[in-house]
Image 1 (cartoon, rainbow, N blue to C red):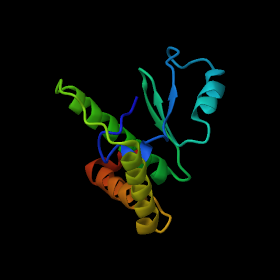
Image 2: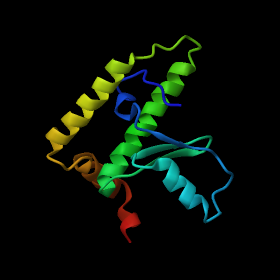
Image 3: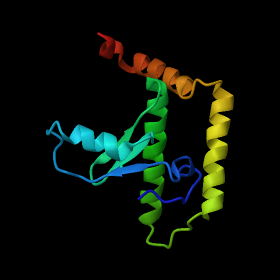
Image 4: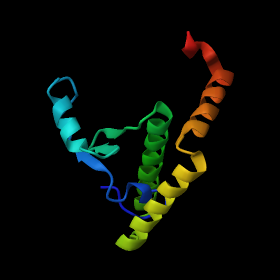
Length: 133
């Protein structure tokens, strides 16, 4: 699972769900199992498959998804070094995650992810705005 080895991972400490890979997702009844496994959380690792994130808004869901992907990438990069990982103590990981969440809520005035999402939309428009058609 996602280990508390970096500041990037701490917002997900104890707050990421897991769903076991069932094969290509074509069965409608898997939706119920996904929702059950997600529960009240906003981030999920689809084991051997990918990641999923939720939010009250598209920007919030996007930023959570982006940060979860970055946390996973940091862990994969660290594991590729074939060196023992330095796992943060539970209290440090929990406190760091709470601090990051608190700062995110305060700094954005409840508009979590909107600044980043607006920037990326402008960037996409500069590269190729045809997606809007």
